[in-house]
Image 1 (tube, rainbow, N blue to C red):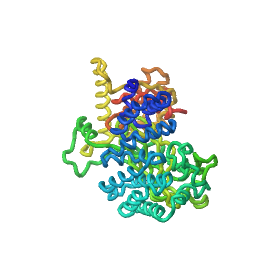
Image 2 (image 1 turned 90 degrees about the vertical axis):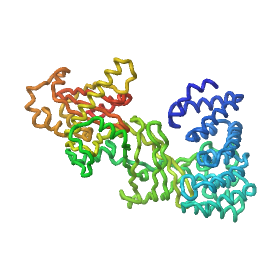
Image 3 (image 1 turned 180 degrees about the horizontal axis):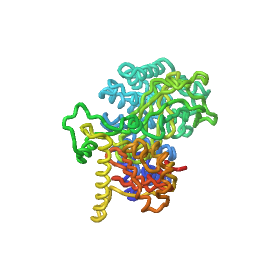
Image 4 (image 1 turned 135 degrees about the vertical axis):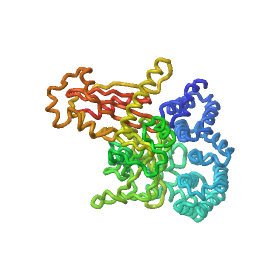
Length: 552
């Protein structure tokens, strides 16, 4: 088991990172091929899960990927472990509780009583947290389908009646009341038919056994019509984030604030760094959420795709975690409709505009899996996936944020800031190299063999929010009508000649506190780009970023 020590770093990564997936893949192999190590692997999983409940889904996926006899042994151990937890920790493991209740061989009575104690002693019902309430109802629904009602009648009645009377969210109250009425008025056999197979004609016994159950999210996939790929997020502006778009509308000269406490007439680099250290600068992305034109539905239990709901109520989008940013807040949409082709318009309820704010810890491209939870037309809770949200380098870049107490004109301030930052980063890199220290900054050079007219055009569009001033383009020797007058100017691609042209400075802020600075030396037939950054890891993305911008 000592071999897993080399993978301890996974705790600092998201549950979707390569190192995390490698760890759980290795554990799967060990459980299948080396069953005598079962106790050691369980202790390792316990050591992972108890302090890091965000890996709960990884553990569930692992359990679903191993033989059923080993999976049930693990679930029994986790069942005992969860019952020993303090009540306040139970909310972190509701996903695992749901997976445990799926097993008919593990009595759920003690878990139901523990859940009831948890909601009575906590503020969950008063707060009306829809996500927790929905998980509790999914657990209740699983128990109604997978277990004999006479064995769980009393504790499950207590749980559902408490939710129906006390939960703040009306959707959770209504659904809890519905399950309570089923449990108290209808025999268990008919409950299973209503909840599981009233649409697809399955018998009451078709999916009760363990072997017939799909591994992950088995209840929803088999019975709730888990739908995928019928919703899509469409970016309002794929080229820039909202922070950059706002900057495009601002005037070149910033106006002094009327609430300045201590105006700064002289540039102060320390004041600038104090501003970015004491504030947060989330990146905002805007999307339209709507139905896809040709939705694709999938079902694990049937080869033929089912129809998808045409109306969604209380829709919640949940985003997976990433190691480069703070968790993204859930997005709540009250209602979304597919509508008929002749009536669809780019407005509510067929389209819903949403904003997603992302607080970066380190400025690197990343991606997020998106899960959609919603109620269908019949009030049944379902979930599905939306296409992965991929953030590229251009989504991370933002204009520099000027402190509010600066009285300089915007252009003057940015030119001074650019020069000061360039000198500071360049000096820090030189000192780190000479002292043998680990470098945080980096510098690079990019050579672009493209005519000046194309370079200037792309600078004025794809890098416009990060220019210090558009005048740097309009007054350039190779811009517009002045290009003919420059016939006698430099036409070679010699580096010394190219560097003699006036540079066009570009200054970019990368939250939370880093910068990317570029100088474009534009000549008629080629352009030299000098680049420095105080975050070296970003340099591996710069080549592709610039090539995509200046590609002809």
